Length: 181
Image (cartoon, rainbow, N blue to C red):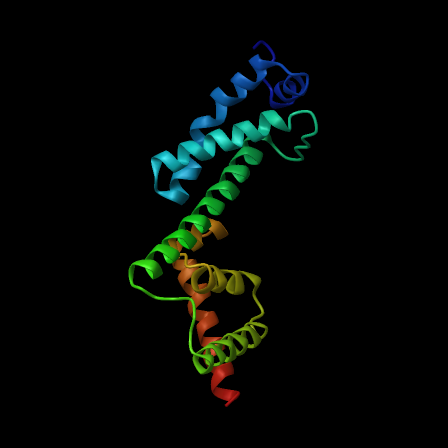
């Protein structure tokens, strides 16, 4: 295409230009796939994310509002779709693991009450944590089942920072729980 700027490509895409869509795909699909792969660590799922991102772009082309740069928009969309796939995978793996080990979702009433009390205590303790990043990192790891690397990718930080966020949150929770006895 002769006018190869993001603004021109988007304007032509909104008008239904298949050439503009192909140009956008050619420009950014590899970076979108790389972003998805870094999160998912699975080539096939990363390719699915690419298809999802560009299908969504094409379907919403007439109403799409991109406030920042097109590349950042596509990479953000890839990140969100990959994280969603990761959550679904973790949930599925947890379900399969429970099924394989013969665990049931039913617990004794006293155990169920104990679990609820612990969860309530942890949630109350999390309210004492000032940093949103600390809270988010803790929730991703302990409530969503992600590891340090995945937490780092989701938060857009490094693995050492994600470890620090979680460790500091744990220290705050320990102090809270020790003082609430």
